[in-house]
Amino acid sequence: MPLDHIIVLMLENNSFDRMLGGLFPPRPDQVNPGGGVKGAPKQYSNVDQSTGKTYTMVTTTAREMPEDPGHDLTDVLQQISNNCSGFVNNYVSKYPNSPATERQEIISFYADGALPVLHDLAKNFTVCDRWFSSMPGPTWPNRLFLYSGTSWGFTDMNALHYWDQPTLFDLLSNNGIPWKLYYGDISSTYILVNHPDPTDTFPLRYFYQDAKGPEANFPKFCLIEPGYFGKTPSDQHPPHDVFRGEALIAEVYNALRANDALWQRSLLVVTYDEHGGFYDHIEPPASIAPDAKRDGSGFNFDQYGVRVPAVLISPWLDAGVITDTFDHTSLVKFVLERSGLGSNGLGARVSAATTFQSHLLQAPRDTSNVLPSVPVPNFFPPQDQPTLTDHQIALADMTRVLASQIKNPSVSVPLLRRSPDQSPEHEAQLAVDRFEAYLLDQAKS
Image 1 (tube, rainbow, N blue to C red):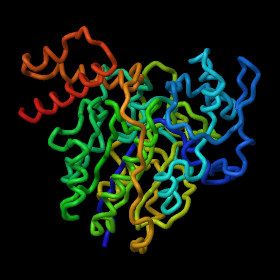
Image 2: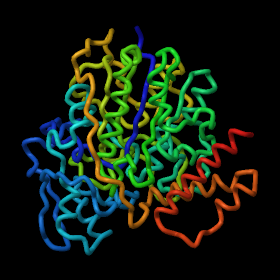
Image 3: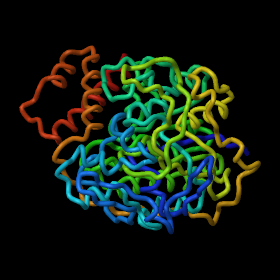
């Protein structure tokens, strides 16, 4: 019985310490330190230079961050400077009128059990405590490392960048490996010039439908993107309720466990694209550049981004912690090698990446009594956002570019026309409408 199915759920903008640090004590390895902050949170602090106040790590129960912390390249370089001492100062520089409670939230963490779904899965399956985002910057460049092994030299989120690099999806399709993309409302993979074919792109409800079917018909690889828009976004991106993401994790996990034939041959990877400006006490180590391209930012792609949560959920791995150093390209390489495609073709970072292949068991362990399901938590009632986040604005810009490519002007023109209603709710719905219209147009052609 082989491991045949790899399912990746990538969420948004939270650090390892914030989400999982409360479960593990520090692991003070001199070469490859890891672990969390359990039992020793006051060892870690940031000084607010504007007030002189020292903020130490404390537990939090906050499910919504009022503002979106900085996580562009310049923000992250400040945050990780001087042994990760700049997180609070960076937040203050972006929000100088922020109260002390918000500044504290940047360096706070969830105690064991505060995130019931993620924490139960982490304690019953496998945690990677040195999984770093692929570069010290925002969502799109980091997601691009998962999609293609490189951000093609770019460090920002401009929908007009020409991301025409070869992708993981290309290699799978060209070699007849069945795969699918499931999206909550919009897929960020469509920033790629060589984006997935609409025939491989499905609303999230189809994942749950496919998971009920025969194991042999389920894709070898699938990527799940959360909902980014609407009144109940599930991506955990500030200011969204983290329990909406908890509910999504639970629903995906429960769907796999409900089909034992599928579960016995599957690996579910739950991880995050980047840290979103939240504190982590492990300084990102050096990395190698994936290619020679540069965007003029001066960044050489020679350092990983901040550490993020990563939980490997499968009967093919023992419960516990893997201490190897990974980034998102580790997952790319793992998928390619499991698909029999080698590890070349997507740049130097993928070729050099460490994977968790050596940690797989020779046969699946008995998980019949290991967390057979998890309760789906309740989240806050649907509510409007006062403004769109930078990520949502970038996604809306992407859908505007997509809509401009729709061949039928009777469809494209209304979607591109400036509306007198420029409320965040209207702009969000318009972005979703553009994306769906583009998929339909491409499918017809």
